[in-house]
Length: 329
Image (cartoon, rainbow, N blue to C red; front, top):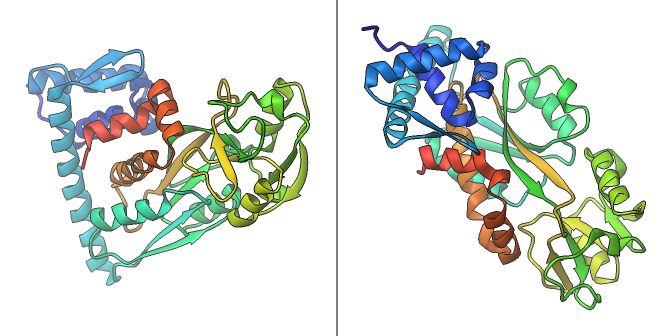
């Protein structure tokens, strides 16, 4: 019987993290038959099935969760050994963990989770308006971890040395004045906002502008971007005075505004976690992702409307759920 090798452990972890054998194979640079063969080898060695195939993807069995947890410990120990050897051979000190993010409500919780996961390492952060510039800095080594929204042109970027994973397909809600005739509805039809003045960030910071315009076009109108604001309190003040704007689903109402889901979820934006393969969290991208998953999940109670949406749309957060299932703490 063959022995377990590090490549087998990496394969099992990749399947658990991606929720898909095909995606895991692509991530590791393998063909799907080669990935399947590695999985079968591990299952023969441990004596049982590690994953169940479901409509939402490959979900670890009870045995699978145990194997993945043990595999991560082994890979982390090996990665730590290699990092320590390299640091000592080069005489380099352990530098700070540099984390960047577009404006998002779970960033503070992510930093807290990272402090628990990487104790003893200084964490420095920077928030940037544009995901494109943020990603450029990550690729250049100016950040080690980044949280960003999908933006037009991302698929054509060369992301050498960087691992990118989707955290959630996040619905955009809408913020309305509390006195608006639509404010009392459980959800708002986007088409009913055709005649409104919209608040948006400045054009250079709207990475998904085409997606926004397409959603509005599908509702039968072209949005009238009347106000540009790159700061949340200014945008909220403009909404309270009569404008509307797309809002993060965790956003709270109050101060003259309400935040409501859009009927049919016409605008879904992928929230991504990107990690460099070198630096303070080299070999620990799955831990960084699990930190982000816990931080994001903790914010759901901020808006009960989002909690309802979350329960009704499990497909939008299947990868996040898998990460929490495999690595709950």
